[in-house]
Length: 130
Image (cartoon, rainbow, N blue to C red; front, side):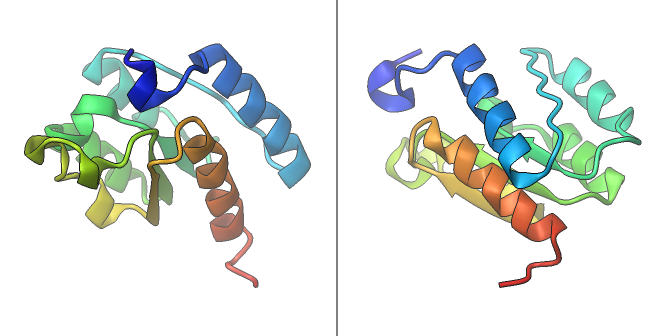
């Protein structure tokens, strides 16, 4: 997809980078991707062993109340990530249904948004000790 907006890394490269960072942070990481809203919701609802979520919901960010409900229904923290800066995009992309219920949002840093988001989750899970 549009490398000038989303960067040149493949999803596999992003996942591998996150797995290495997770080890450094003392976390375990279970990466999952689907283009199907229902599959994402099922995976979230089957997440007893998961402590938190790092979520790039793509276009579902702007339209999926069901995805939002699934995430909030777990009672677990999540960080929303986007490679692009949503505020600099088209008007319909500037509203996130997830941001108001997320611990935080990291956006606009290309694939590095994922790594920053994972660091934020580690901070959150560690009790926000600074």
